[in-house]
Length: 596
Image (cartoon, rainbow, N blue to C red; front, side, top):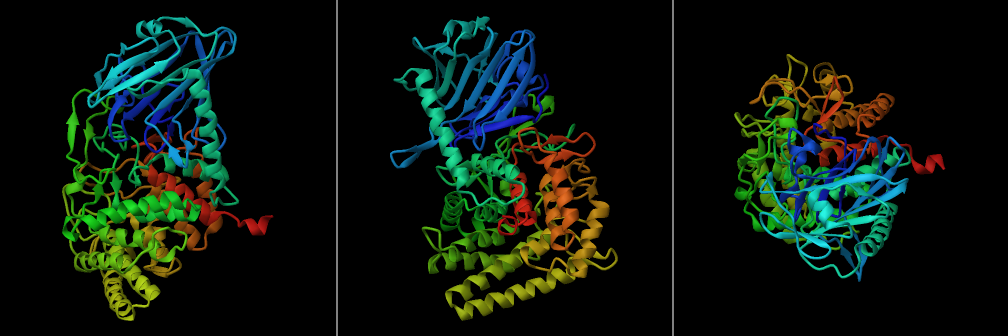
């Protein structure tokens, strides 16, 4: 069967996996989310029928499947039923819980397969991959484990199932629960079922405790909780990085080569992610991400800063095509690395300043901003002031052209504006006046050169003609009031030209790869927020609720949606899309104190 994005995500902030609607593990990278996929069927034409790259529980005479997350957790359950009403339940999770004063998050994936009704007949198809799509051959390494040699290391699959039946893919009667534990090539002392049962209970407890600490809105609670958990799963806790998505090379639209590796941390996203985490009250996750950003700023000169970094902070992301994966539904190429790392993207300086501002204003944080950090941020501000009106690749990372992008200039303005606010907070009057003057100068240029008098709206580039959905963020950044007639005119222009049904395109003009044919999910949430800011709150709520209905059945979103078939496209799950759900829900919800 061809892959689709009706997927559930599990993980523990060290590893993650994507599981399809019938309980097949379709994607899982080890030893961390940007590693070599041990299960890679998502990026093949055949999907779960592929010769390798998947972990499938195949029920004989299978008829239907049901799937859900356990309430307020990242634990996924899939129930398979055959024609005779024999029923199997698969519980998938990555252990995460507090132990001895620390968070225990091993490189480990656990599957519990248990009979629920009757005597199910099933086949375990365990077909791992290595080196991005080549077949990996497990071998029996002991009485209860298989050894798996992959590109960088060895792994162990410990199980109380018949290893011979698994290796030979023989039909078995499931008359008792069986467990599979994929992890490091290390001995597990306890019986697999005993260990999995204990880890499952502790993991459920962890997630429910974490959710209880969130500052969720009165309305849209289910959507926000699932988005928050998924955002958490897209973090790499060892460094604090937040990945843009857990996958690479899922195309932005059918039949396109817009296939990119999103298993990186984009500096542009930092402010918006931190804003969402802050509003949720997820302060530990937010502080870890701030620490990751601070480390990048501290060890890099202004001239060396890149648009994106590896999740370890690595400055390398050389892009190349892998030959052994045909691509999502056969739509290659499959790219590893991302050439955007070499681009000029002038918005990054403002993005870093905006993200770091939290350290000077939030008394909850363990480490506050100080004069040393402010001095580093001022270097970024000087750079922002210098390049705000210089050409770059822009927010959409155009590969063939450079122009003076309105969004990059707006982020440069926001960086200078926030430096003035930080200086005021710390009592540095001279710095405040200096940065306020810089911000005012940049703002004047943006309002003059990004405004197209003929079109009567703000456009994507200085002195240009094309519309761009990032104009929806101008009030969000504080550059202009959301009720300013110029912004209202821009909002209406975007409605006419970039909106198709409930979806907003990032732009509709041609780029290096033709015209975009799918709606960019985060742009639709930007549009919702802009409507609310302009006073069109009821319209915003109605649109937001229709957007929520476009999530997959587990409440997750990818990067793009095809407007006609309502099909998800692009890398998955998309952090930016989860942030969009959170920000719009918090903006539109009724207040607790007014409803209780």
